[in-house]
View 1 (tube, helix red, strand yellow):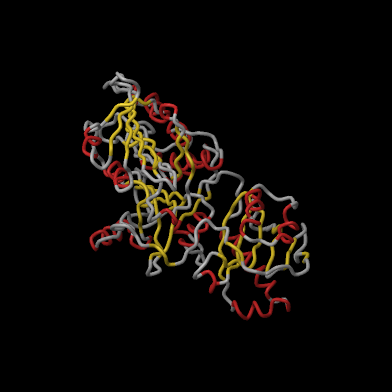
View 2 (cartoon, rainbow, N blue to C red):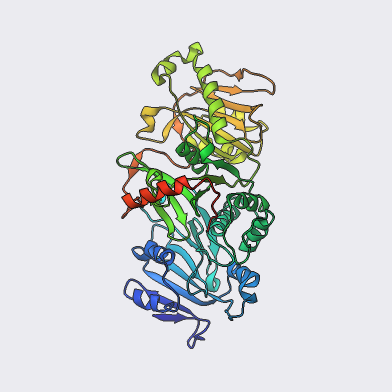
Length: 488
């Protein structure tokens, strides 16, 4: 263990280094005054096998805890310091960024895990779509980490719902440049929808308060009550469309909220999700049909821009358009090869990013040139038609795409442009049928979705599955779920 900061460093201010794994216990002893909650243990477990060095900043002014302290703890009788500790983790590797991330330790004994961003574990990294980059500068060193933000609730000023909204808000701040938000902003937003329970100390937020708080933050959410889904809608399809768009999904179960940040399929082909659970830690794996938290009740998809059209409607109309285009004589061979049911994958993105990445994904120059200068909405839905045989082994599987205005309404869809099997299409306003150009290169190209759902993952360690007793408990909760629960 060594201090950094001069020959005779100030014990209260100098950074402290821990060589790992040899000094792991000494590192734990440096914050032995704090409870090692499941969330904190999960953060440490995430880096334990990777980290070779840890650095502690013993006196750190954290913006988020400063907000919590000013909003609540400064007004309580028990004196509480407003300084935190911050742990940084490093891995010795020459071929990649050695910085694994950081964890702020709040001076809250029972709920110490503050603002944290740790890179995903290597076994799951390919299945985490919601990753943003944070830059920190401890002692003048500029360090970058890519991961999903995490924080444990403090159970006073903020509960699980506050923590989930905060995680998503910080993600969109780093990923899309939305304003930086704190827990106090979330509390103010939730207070605009009065409920019998107190705002501070928080007794939990209702589903309506979560939606209102997100709207107050400017992250106008797309909301789903899963008990009222249309018969043709599928929860997994809904969630995966947004995760393919790199948009995290806030999930409400009975009395608890978590954030879905990725998905994948195990080697048996079973769909699993990766989520951040403020009570369990970041990057936990769960199967939707065996969630130990019980039935899924609500989904909230906070949006960083004007995304009015939902993914399922974009995909529904694109399917009809593709079916119509495949009936053309030029596409007869492709129609016979694909059969009746089409493999479609849908995501929403900013139009500028879509146009920039199109050549990088292998879209031929002639098609890209015909679309590049067309005016579009800022956000667009992209629906890919994929070759199912090619998709089973590669992301080079896209046969065609239709790009749809994300700001249009469901009753008046506004397709913009697209292509199929080398033909480029342009929908002019008011036209039902598109204008078509001559055939160009029809080689399948790389998918633009964030993730590719084929069996591949070797899951690390135990996953969250329900025991028989928890399934019985869930059935009881389901019978009582008609009464709105509060997310605590």
